[in-house]
Length: 178
Ligand SMILES: Cc1cc2nc3c(=O)[nH]c(=O)nc-3n(C[C@H](O)[C@H](O)[C@H](O)COP(=O)(O)O)c2cc1C
Image (cartoon, rainbow, N blue to C red):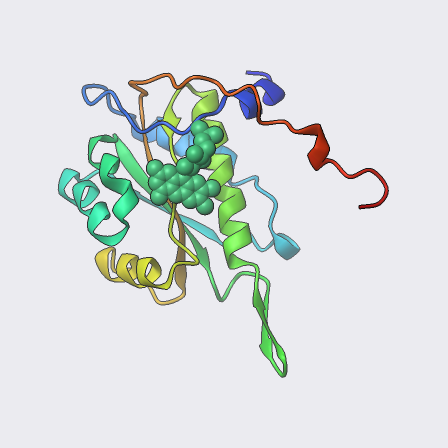
């Protein structure tokens, strides 16, 4: 798939073919491609937790209420960023971290690589919502330094959403000065 076409035609998929599962090789190929995402200072702080246990998939909605459709996915990829590994500063007056940005870029890579292979996926938010972060850390027994950034249900699509045609708004480009 042409990259520009991929960027234009990727849509959030929330209905999955429940009879057709993604193979481990399929999932690994998606995560391999996503691992080429940019990251601050090239720290590559992402980790991917892949879950296909039906009960666990169904329970995501108890931690993040807008993930109820995860129960029908072939798997969920939880994209985490290692808060110790990511480029960050925590001294004097400076407190900042690129964890969410690095994790989100990897998550977008997951969405695009999945789309390129004909799989469906949807970014469901985690960080920066404190209750969701804490809930996921407990639910999935994540180490304290693993900050969940995205919950991505993935599988073979069972819907083809209408492609929007109005996403590009030329007035949002500000040439030279505001
Ligand atoms: C930070 C973020 C959080 C999101 N969280 C959810 C979510 O919890 N549940 C969901 O169904 N979709 C979620 N989405 C998907 C958006 O609803 C979707 O991207 C948007 O409606 C545009 O549709 P498209 O992805 O098909 O272009 C999220 C997207 C982003 C970027």
